[in-house]
Length: 516
Image (cartoon, rainbow, N blue to C red; front, side):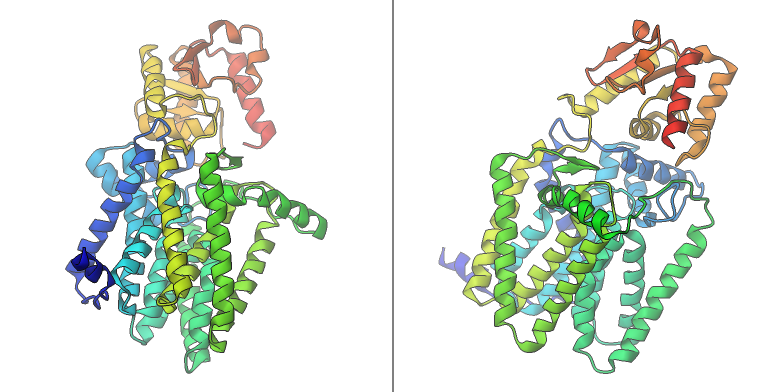
């Protein structure tokens, strides 16, 4: 016991600049990141959503030697290049499926965590504190699910703010360091600006402590602008046809929007959310999440008052970034807890910096211990987390496989699906065999599947069936005869083997009237 205590209290040694050791650390953190997520991965809720499926399809195109957009397919924002490559690696090994998506996300997430840990190793931390920060990083509630998800820029932005963290506090001052900070900032900006914004306080705070601030700022800004220009120059060559969120400006509307977003604050912190949904959390976990935020807030307030005057400038920057963040999300009229991910990512880094600077203070030791235990406790809520909005209480993988089996048994060559996200999931897994379309003729993220379905239907309507989520029919169930042939499949899905023209036309009208 004495030897164990002595070992844990010993200082972490300065890491050698060895590529092999870095890769070994990366491999270890990758495996640890998988291990702590097993409660979710082995649950009936283990599934992927339609946006993740888009990345999977882009990875398939990459492996087939076809071109793919720099940005999330069908839009000119959400830099996805790195997620496509990481997913492609596992699709090459495992084939298309949920594991390729999850491991592709965790490969980038664990790389980011590796950069953070290699950075703080130079702070001469006790081994127990280093281990606690490692555990906090891999189980942090905000990134418990999102760290394993490839959804058009989220995990890419996380990776590159981690690399910036390394550049700021580990690399020796040089022109390369400054340009690299600018490049990584540009990539993070193009991937997800809301994740970069709170983290940028660390960049500004670092600059305030430097000599020749103006010269260094220009160097970083040059790398930043060139990176954005380069990606947009090539990325915008692809026609973007998907409308993004439209901002709303105006004092009254922004107050209403912010109040709307506040309802999803804890859900956004905890991964218990999906698009506009605030998924119910276990009561014990809800209490712990709020305790985590309260303890974090108290600790940062304490750190502000007991910091040196020069360090207090960081908190002014934090306040300004939070204000800017709230202004930005208040322009979004659609409630979605995921818009808080960037703010909580900033909180994670603010805590790490403060704890590492005051590692011997009793309150720092107590804070990191409490936060680490709460974060670790979150893995026991993993089986309750959902990555789908239509919950039928089924095993998601088995239900979708049953859906596919039923469609295949009908002999169909194509399928009209009444939900766009199910359409993407289907095309990722089975689109080469039986393409799916959500009644579109144009304006789709990946149009080739829709074009093929329409061609097959035009050649022979009997070769096409209809399907989708049980209970969501785009008002087609009001048409006489639709319910007569509709069959429930695996509780969650349905098929209608009789794709009559009036049903198809109803779907087309619905999509056109709703704007796709």
